[in-house]
Image (cartoon, rainbow, N blue to C red; front, side):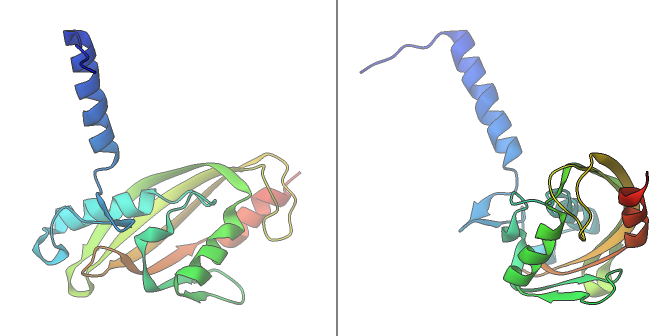
Length: 181
């Protein structure tokens, strides 16, 4: 079957292919993000940009791509009252599901920094969401809009995966917002 395409159709197809490649700029090999070049050969600006792509992919629900984490990754949430350290992809995934009741995630990056000695990238951020899908910390959803400020340090391994993430934010402020009348 031989199809002929008009110029408009070909241009549209080229645009779609270009957009598709832009959307998957972090190529995948075996379902894992792959940096554009080896981490050790990246400039500090390239590492920050790559880490930012990893960080901005978080949605707090089942769509949060766990393939961004190394198998033996560690996630540290210093604001939690009891369990603060989560080791391994499975434990990290279960922890992140605590935020599945929050939708409409928006992460605004206010500042970024690169620590070359420890190969890690830091972000100061504001996280906005709506608590409308499920309970958070035993608090039922009521459609409350939230806005929280915090910071995150991400250590990237040689394969371009998150080896460690450390979050510092005001968890109590989130609870106060969710319980407000």
